[in-house]
Length: 423
Image (cartoon, rainbow, N blue to C red; front, side):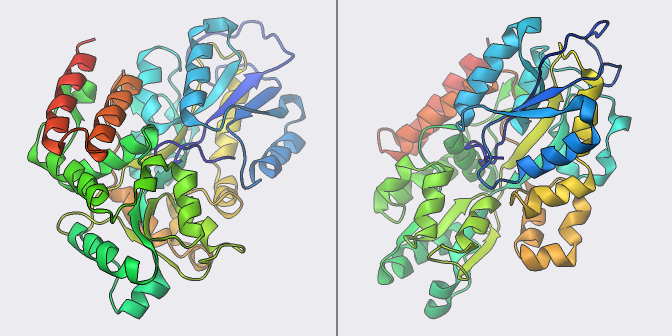
């Protein structure tokens, strides 16, 4: 399944659409109350080719509930637009099961687009605890975690070894190495995802969180961003672009562009999701065998990642709710979650897989990733999250391009987020 380019490409959207069947007696309410039939799985695409075999396994054992794969756009923003447009159509919509970005759960639940789920039907106790929190809204379970994610700092092991320095733990060390070591080896210093899209919201939130700040509180009702921590975090990124140890090209980077820059041997450091580590380590990469991963740095030590990933939810108007729930249980089973990692290079939600010696040997970053997920923070929670994200993208991009100082940008951010909260 293609890793969607938002919150850490961290983002993957999957919709299960009913085809060729009209159920009688199906009702809105909790999934699992009845109704089985064929399904159509709409996804943002499958770069690694892992999803087809998983669905073939489902189809073999569920001949009356076969899944047909349909692709939505590979852009998270475009997929969000198509998905919400369809959901607003009510019972005329196509989508029944939605694999939504973890930060869409609150918005979709508040809008009444997705139905509460019975927690006892899914193995929530076996999941990493922070991912379960992303599936709840207003005290109820509205989704089931499917894929998790946390940002990591990828680095060139060979270059740092030659320079005789360990990977950076603080912003000061990252800045120093990006300024002094990278140029000696013909490399750019550091990059994240700084194009004004969802990825910039993630990068900005991580910088603010790492400095000890927040953006919103009380599920979006309170704006908390006007702080010294926010000015420090956004100022760190703006300074990097102004001084050149973050290349100007990073202003055009989403996950894929930044991954390719690192994979082609053009960067010393990269903030990205774990799938980029797998791609940079794979055959054909110019840096294969020379890649390391550590937690994101912060001002005084390890920083904070935004919690990425996706959750499976059921449309309020789903006509085959039992099939929807059964498919969700299948996709979150331990056997399938193992294949999500081994075939798709996507971080599973099952906690036990992070302790598996065979998996750690194949994916050495798993212990680092687990620690990052357990300490990660969600993006700002709000029923108006799409508007919140658009504000963050626009304001922070102006700070990164020098149109506003970080202090002025934070004050503007507080004003504009206040306006969103009042809607």
